[in-house]
Image (cartoon, rainbow, N blue to C red; front, side, top):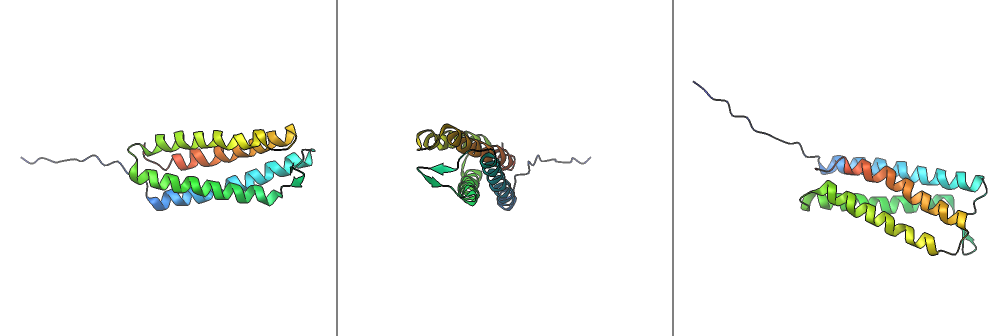
Length: 137
């Protein structure tokens, strides 16, 4: 009589897959925030802060920089956190809320402030779920 041993193996995402997904989400979020800024400007929302215009490309660049910071956080959490997905989502949601604070106090019109906040939320809505899906629960 023979016995067959079975082992339970939960596949954990590789760092490469996490980074690849993060890069794609970053590119999508950058394009989306530039599109939101362009659309807002097209309907008359000023992109001026303190009298100086924000270039549309600036939305994409800053989105990319901070999204890549989020991907780096995810990579670190995937290695060191006991529950990386939960920790990542909680941290990035908190950071997203904090990112809205400068938009509230910036020297700009109400519509401009709202547009700035919208770009933060659009980027977060793209990057956070995409990266979180690649993290172990």
